[in-house]
Length: 356
Ligand SMILES: *Cc1c(COP(=O)(O)O)cnc(C)c1O
Image 1 (cartoon, rainbow, N blue to C red):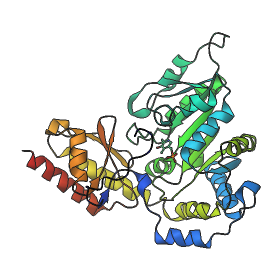
Image 2 (image 1 turned 30 degrees about the vertical axis):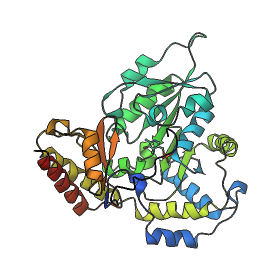
Image 3 (image 1 turned 120 degrees about the vertical axis):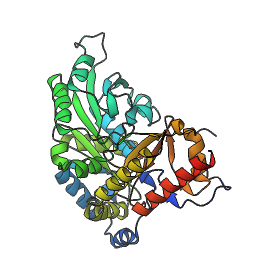
């Protein structure tokens, strides 16, 4: 099977420590209670008060005029592309961007756009790199209409774009008539880590979205924000793609709960990630990227075990962790405690010791 996700291996023990992804958090009992109490209506008809409350709150939080509730972050990205661009247009994004590597080619398949990869360390690029990628507007060249960034950069190691660098790349885009889109899947991680408010972070960006199913711990939902005109146009694509929902307030209530209770605590995830990185670095041969937020990328091959072998060995000991681009990614979140991080480090040391 290539397309359907694999079912869990029946031979593997239950997962005790889940460092696989912040998408794997389970809704807490208090979040479920908030969902049960939610006032709901037909979202597709504009009748769901809880969805309205969430969208109003997100528009205010990101400093935009309006917002729309969508089932996933991937749908936020594709709807932003469909709204900002026309078929034949070109998007500039980092070579590791989720829209380029991880959305099934949807931007080309559905939007007819091409994505030109920009390079730079940790998922980021500079204003000079954007300037160098911009071509004079001629009929031979594809119209360059959108610049996209990820805050934080996922494959860049959860790296937080410095605000000045974000502003600088957005300014170059504006200077050349490109729209700007921020993939804020983990925007609140960036804001908590840097102490910069979301509205300030997203100030140079025409559209921005936040995923509630990453570190914020909701079961479903993402909110895309922008001008009233942009969100109005985005609604047509939401309808076309089947993203218009019904009693979605049940899920919006979980997102509102997450905004109230799960944002400040992201600092704990960041501290746990730093502790995990510190422990890994003390193991001879393991190469670790210092985390800005909740993602810890490391390569154990210098310690005598390949990344896939270590992932498998950990899984057989009840620890789930992911393999991404030949490296291991450990992710801290709501369901990972400091004690679990220490235990994971112990188990990694054990596995390495057994291999001599
Ligand atoms: C997870 C993720 C997405 C996609 O979000 P889904 O809710 O899983 O569709 C997009 N961009 C980045 C950077 C992500 O980490």
